[in-house]
Length: 326
Image (cartoon, rainbow, N blue to C red):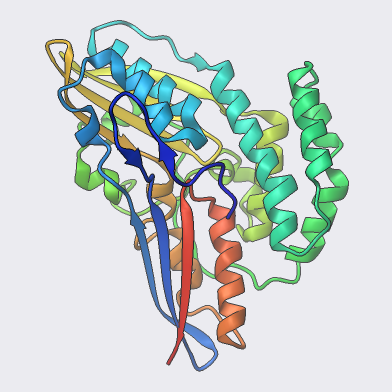
């Protein structure tokens, strides 16, 4: 997986910050994946926030999580406004939308061609970014990506289909999340569930009409549709949980991002972040369901299939894949 900085140096007296690592451990036995262990290791960013002036969260979090810095900054600012009792209208944040569009283009034009041994599309990526910056619509830019899409579709069409799935997490506003999860805590943030089970968030969840077979190709197609249509992409909202407690919801390229901020006066007493990667790489979530029992002629084939599955779910951290033979 390509990232734009796996180790991020934060300023404001914070130490060098590693945003984490996805570790996937597989056992290949008798032509199938046996044990599947999905572990998303994350540092505890909350310790850097507790006790700080509340306004610092919106400045510090984009430095700690630079890949989705605009989304993290927007969520932090909105959660603080809600905690202070402000009424926050739902909307689409231009910076968050632009960041999500960049992430979609990066995967479609750089990561997927590389993963499938297709010709590189670096020049097309630069041109597409320039067109967006000059005011061209995402739909017009997406129309220019059809050749790349056909190449990816042809290459992925030869891949074995995904055999099992988890439910899709629908797009939610901050107010809607309160009915599902009245309060967020560290345990939920590490392994979130929707109506008691793991769920998948992201482009396909925003485009359920494309989820008929819900294989890897569907997820790439949903990413292209998400980029072109922007349905829900970059949406932001916030709601008061209780006096001094605010929650924000942001739809990023990878899916739903939640922040919950607890104030003590005008300082941060507690902070919870539920990121899309925690949904999509839940220990019993989508990746585990896809790979458990998956047929593979060799350990190397299983490793390649696992790498494509990881890319389809798109972690916001670096990944390590280990395949052992029984």
